[in-house]
Amino acid sequence: MANIKSAKKRAKQTVVRNARNASQRSMLRTSVKKVLKALGENDAESAEAAFKVAQPLLDRFSSRGLIHKNKAARHKARLNARIKALKAA
Image (tube, rainbow, N blue to C red; front, side, top):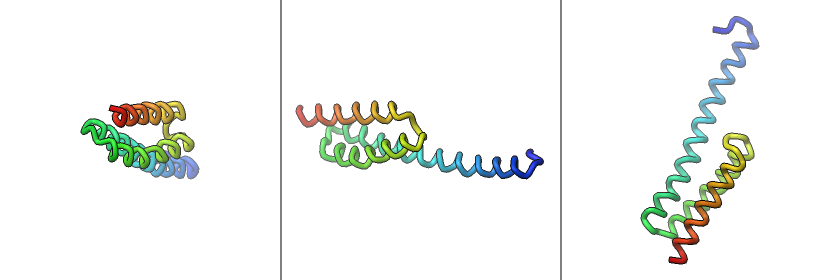
């Protein structure tokens, strides 16, 4: 355990940030899974609605550094492509 005051503060900050990051990462993954579930059920409308919720989350969390910007772009591109393919079929 830390003995120095600043090290104690950093330890407390780490706990808070770790909890926030875990919560936000979980929220992001859940939103992406909702899109994938709708795609799996061949429901283009609900997939598109879920994608409209997931897209800003991907953008927001990539800009904050929670996930890499290329990972966010890759997720958006692949999900959007699958939605378009489902609509075309």
